[in-house]
Length: 165
Length: 96
Image (cartoon, rainbow over all chains, first blue to last red; front, top):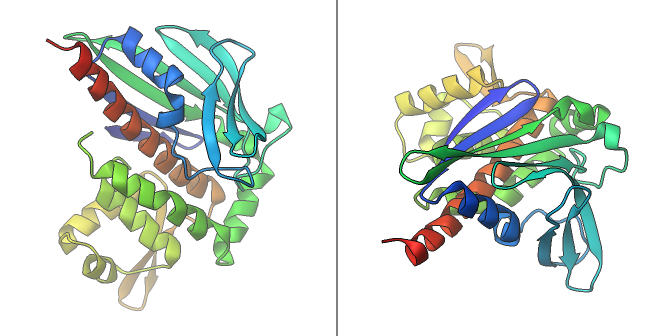
């Protein structure tokens, strides 16, 4: 897996041993198992994360008590080539209700040699989150939430990082 | 950020500024390796360095955008690692 960065985006790139049709299907239909569970905006544990496979659909977490958190809008759904969805989560990990202040994620599934697929994930327009990330900087400077967030996902990241990727 | 050592360095620096020697003491890699990771993190705009006496102290870039990038990089890094594991299962099921 490799990572490149531009000032306002994060891009990750991974190649998998399945054709684009399978890669696309796994990413969307099994998104519940793709998304790191640690990130949860609900007050209760997540029972399931659902990726609605159509433009205008949502990605939402459903809590164990039935409550839902719709944190992404599906903006493009072009199997097996790509999917684009909004990221309606502020840098403070709260739901962002203003679409103009949401970033977006594009995942492309590019055919590679030997029935493999190169998956390129770009999370872009991070600057749209505007004041939120300035607030995040203050939080960091004041020994606030940022190290906490980081610790929350670091365990999962380390676990994932220890597996062959 | 695909590299576990690099993620750990960012994690340690998020907890507080450190020198190369302090980081190396906490990680199972050599000082030159830590320096190499720090160089990549600086190039990516995630980490900044400031002199303190004769020492160079590294810290996470106080600009929140870099912090957000680091966090999302970790989030999607975990997600894609999960994704790879899932596709490997499919590959076994349908493979030769």
